[in-house]
Length: 274
Image (cartoon, rainbow, N blue to C red; front, side, top):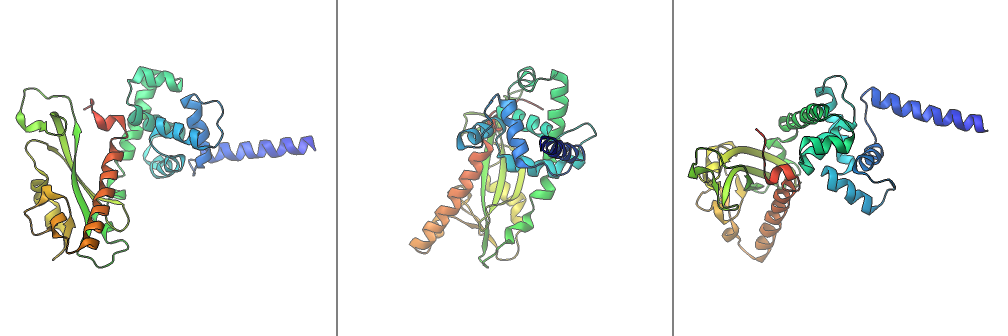
């Protein structure tokens, strides 16, 4: 019986190793255990506390980490393994210096920088595959508004020479602005454009230069009062009754949640790289 159990254990181990080596799907539990190992948690038991601990280090759930690996492994050179996704995610989430993070994962600083940067670039390369404006019609209820739109600012080091066009009133410092569109029916990000200098480009100006031109006839977008003044904008004052007011408020609140999630990654709070 002992031999049979050992054989079964060896078989399971080989299967898992082969799965990883062949760059096939990696189960979220494997990401979970490896993530807690990197984070320094020795218990590795599946519980809410450890799940929060995982998110604090990597910014996403083990399930999302697994999906990311499935989507990017073909874009990475030979020599990359599933756990390198965790390196890239930790770099963006924690955003400490390379020597600190390299020590965390137990590798050389140069190796960490190379692997994590390539993972980050591979994730960024998914933009056109994941963020599609046509997805705004998913689960459409034939409303004239399919998207909520808002600008979100990201702080950057003050460029030199000084130019007032970088100024973001949200930070009282230099920043870059992106316009984000979220599908009202699904909550998916369907549109993003930027960066724009915060002090030079208002939300409405950004909308008019790109997204407005891509809307179908009579289509409008839901936005806050900062976009007021364009026929293609449906703002809070356009509500016909209390029901409309509540629906508009709920849609904008969900969009604000999306904006906040960007800032859960420390690299998005104050970017210092090129």
